Image 1 (cartoon, one colour):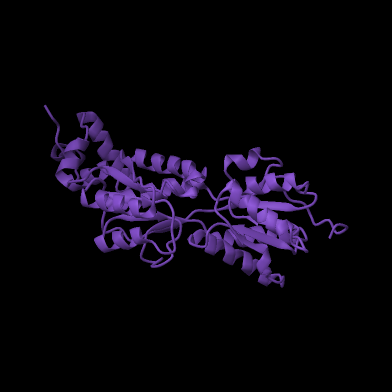
Image 2 (image 1 turned 120 degrees about the vertical axis):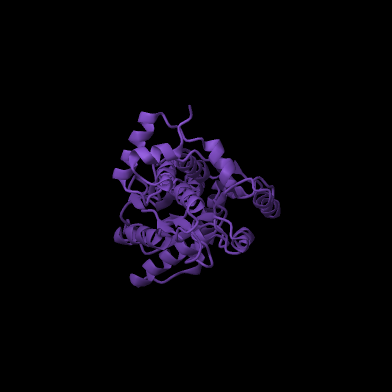
Length: 344
C-alpha cells in the first residue's frame, strides 16, 4: 500500500505542506523539523514520487545552460569545463537535469533560448557569461523567466540574480602585489571590453595605479581574445615598445600560457626579466613553466552557487533576488620577483 504525504504529516505531527517543504529541502524549515519528518518517512517507507511532482507542478526538473556560441573562441577556455562541473554538482543535489543551448552564432543561441522558454523545456536558465549588450537577458526579463548570470550583469545589477567575484577588488589586489614588489611599469592584458568581467578588472587595475600615484599608460593596456594567441599578440606589441613594462597582469590563465610562450620565444626570462600575474587559477597555471602566480576565483563554487540559487528561485518564486559574491585569493608561485633595479 502506498504511503501518502498526509500520513507522514499526521505521524510527524506537522502540516502536509511542511512535509512537502522538507522533501523540497526548503531552507525555511528548521533542521530539527527536517530530521523529525525524514525519520517518519523512513519508518513508514515513504519515497517521494518525483515524476508525479513534476506532472502536478508542470515542472521539467531541468535547467537550461546558455553557453557562449560555439563559434565564439571564449568557448575553448578551460574555465567553462570547471564551471560546468560546479553547476552539475549543484543541480545533482536537487535531482535536476541540465540542457545546453547550442548555436554557432549569438543569434542562433538567442533563438535556442526562445525555443527553450516557449517550449517549456526548462524551469530556469543559467547564463555562463555576461555581455555588455545582452539580448538574452533582455528577453528573459521581459518573459519574467527564472534565470541567474555567472558574472555581473552590465545593467540592472540590483534586479538580476547573479554569482560573481569582486573582479574590481581582485585585480586591484593583484596590481598592488606587483607594486609591492617594486614594479611601476605594469601592463594589463585583458579580454574583450564587451565582457563585464574585463571592464571590472580594468577598473581595479586603474584604481590600484592611481592610489599608488603611478601614471596610467594607454600603450600598456591591451585587449585581446581570452586565447593563447591573444596573449602572444599582446606580448609582441608590448615588447616592441621603447619602454617595456617590467610586469604583466593577464586577465586569464589560458591567455597567460600564450604570454609565457611568446616571452620564451623572445628569450625574455620569467620572472628574472619580467613578472607575470594571471587570473582564474585553472590547473594549467600550476603546470606552466614557470608555474604562474594566479588569482584563484573559485570557479567550481561559482557553478555550485549558481545552480543552488536558481533552483531555490524556481521552487520558491517569492525568493528575493540574490547577488552572491564568491571569494578570491592570490596563489603565489614562481612567475614574479621583486624589480631588478640594475635592469630598469
